[in-house]
Length: 321
Image (cartoon, rainbow, N blue to C red; front, side, top):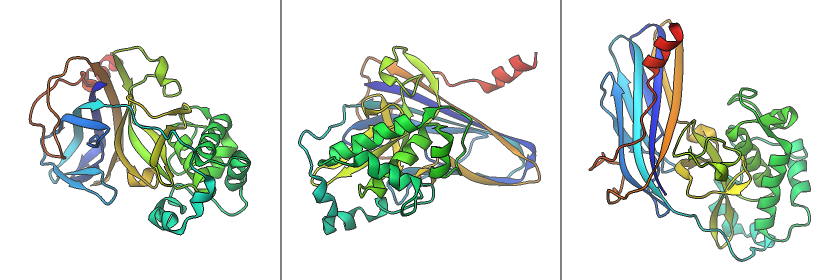
């Protein structure tokens, strides 16, 4: 599936700020399952962009401005070709999870992390143990956890924030994609299955039912799902928000232990005012091939039109009328 993606971030400051520094993680990953055909990040005011690869293999673009300003706009545009991702076709015995070499190789994705915390005997561990009880294959354990998370949480925006704990998510019974992903990750790790958090884009207006989407263009936010490590097979991607496997509608940006390793934007500014940020992703399906893949995080070598990005200046003027 060929997708055009436009991601606009608009920072507004109540008072002029003298300096702002930002790191942006929005460039799609280029690998064997998705090819980046074109990509560019532009800003207003125009700034130099320094792209680097972080510890987890995610492209991080650094931008800084040291002159007084009250606004900063960033626009990331990409064209990506996605392919179906493989799923395991043979059962992997749960007993293989205790292999010492496997555990050492996945140690970072078995331990608690900043946003994925649990304790021995707490609600997260008990729920995970109950979900996987009786499962003899790792695939069954993973599917059982994903199904349990979907049963425990309702998708509801605005009821959580990034600092909420897994226990609080369970008690509240609702959240958004990052809460589904964090809870599934914590439950899997507590059951001895390495799991990692994936940040990306999902071509669907409804995150809970992506296969029902038939629109050519949707306006969304970034999305999150998980990958579980299967001994002797590799990483298996599933989406706890909708309970399905990750497919052509998913576009990976990066992977890490949790949201803290792959936030779309992180930054700081110098000034006495407050900051507001608007962000929106517009994704459109493209039909006709036009380019050859571009390997690596360098600038785009050719242009393929992405869907039109939202014009917030126009939206603001309309709202004020």
